[in-house]
Image (cartoon, rainbow, N blue to C red; front, side, top):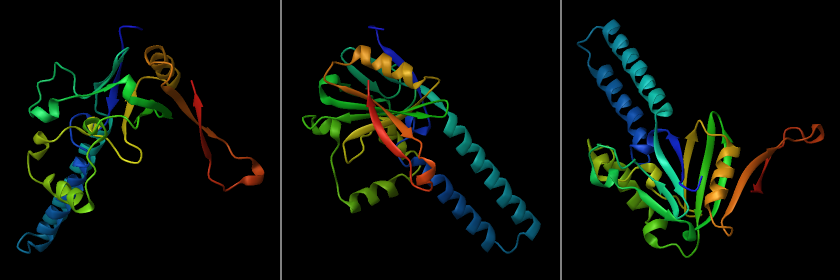
Length: 221
């Protein structure tokens, strides 16, 4: 275990920037509008084209939701997030991983998910901006989102798994084929004692409080 702990990360965040897949339904909507306004095509052809595009979009989204690559590796010095060193994918920033030293990680939260777990690596307040990310305004975020519509722009952006989130500054990923207990024990053996490894447990509500939302608590390792 001292050599490290590696797990496959599931979802499009391993190869695409965050929010990239939102352009799929947008382009589908643009194609549907083009089909509707094209009056010279017969109605049956337009209906078949719209159904075929919808079927293709659903297949693509389904494949991306189960796609996985080994983009999570932890060792006694820290955690590496991103495409493996052996990858041949294009894009320098897309290939560039994010390395989180343990002394800059405050807490690791693990939640059970289907066929795997959800992992949150919460950074400490002393972590540099290079890890916590630069906080820009809403206009800047909207501009970056619009740039994702440009073909091949994703080659110039880091992948979603290597991009931090705000409030608090953290990295979020989903791993598959690894149980919550395996993650907890594996990370506890590698992380320093001051790093909290917490497992989120959903407590079932009693009959008297039916209808209330379930509570989520953290169970430290």
